[in-house]
Amino acid sequence: MDHHNESSDHNRAQFSEMTEGTAEDWQAIAGEFLPYASKVADRVLEHLKLLDGDFGGFPIDRLSHCLQTATRAHRDGRDEQYVVMALLHDIGDTLGSFNHPDVAAAIIKPFVSEENHWICQNHGVFQGYYYFHYLGMDRNVRDQFKDHKYYDACAEFCEKYDQAAFDADYESEPLEFFEPMVRRVMARPLQSLYAAAIDDAPAAA
Image (cartoon, rainbow, N blue to C red; front, side, top):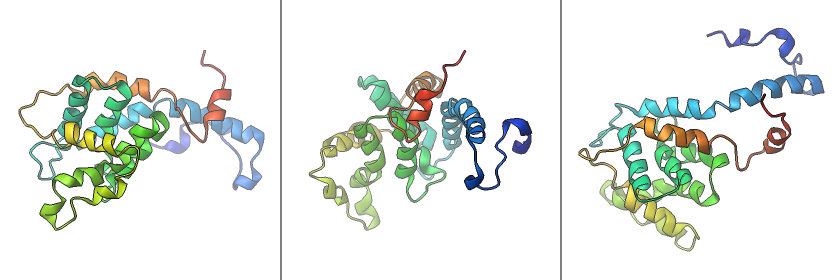
C-alpha cells in the first residue's frame, strides 16, 4: 500500500521541518490522527493474532495462552479492564522478545488503571517465580518489589491466571468473545499526553 497517497496533498501538512509548521498544518495532522487513533483496538487485535500457532516450546500456542488467561480472569469475576489486560499481557512476545511485558504495558497504559498497568509491566518478573530456578536464575527476584503496593495483586495475577493458563484441555472463550471488551476499554484513553487535544476535538457527526 502506498501510504503517501492515502490523503490528498491539500489535507497534508506542508512543512519540511517542524520549526516551519503552522496552525493549519497541525489542524490537518490532528484531523488525520483522531480517526486513525479510533481504530487502535482493531490494530491491537490484529497484532494479537500473530501469536496464533506460535508455541515457543510451550504446551499451547501463545494466543491460546492469552485467551486462557483472559478466560480464567473473566470467569473469576474480574472487570473488563482487568480481563483486557490479561488478554494482552503477552502481546509483546513478537516485537519484544527480551522485554515483552514492557511492550504490552505500553500499549495498554492509556486505557487502564495504575494497578493494572503495573501488573502487566511486571508480570514477567513475578512469573519467573515458577521457572527461573530451572534456568539458573533467581526465582525470588520479584522480592525486590515486596513492599510495593501492587505486589500482591501481581503475584495473584500470575498465580491464578497466568501460570495456570497452559492447560491444553481447558475450554477458553474465543478471541471474538473478547473483541467487544477490547474496543470498549480502548475507546478513549484515561490518561494520555494528547488527552487535551482529544477532549477539544469536535464530536463525530
